[in-house]
Length: 110
Image 1: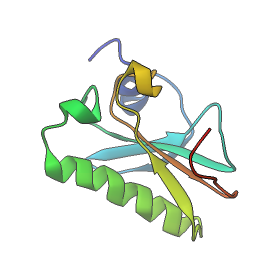
Image 2: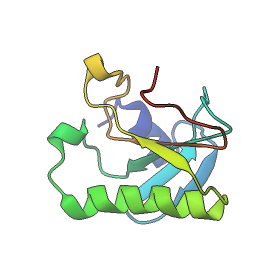
Image 3: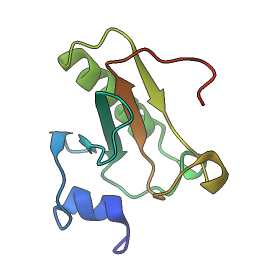
């Protein structure tokens, strides 16, 4: 999708601080981190929301990429967040997982 911010990041048209990439996923530092570690993991293929996802293997790959990055950063505890839709706080409509770690997390989130 040509006007999608995250598609622009994946393609290299929009600069980012890349953390990881493979044939299916791309991960980069969040520009407004909410924790010492705040990485966004996206599928390379554009999918608007988790509710619109139709590829189980790709969604699983996104989560496994998040776990890999957490391991590589030595995080024993971390949170993975997926917002679905505007009412849940999704601001960029390209499926993405937030990897948050490096500080205590409370429940429920604020």
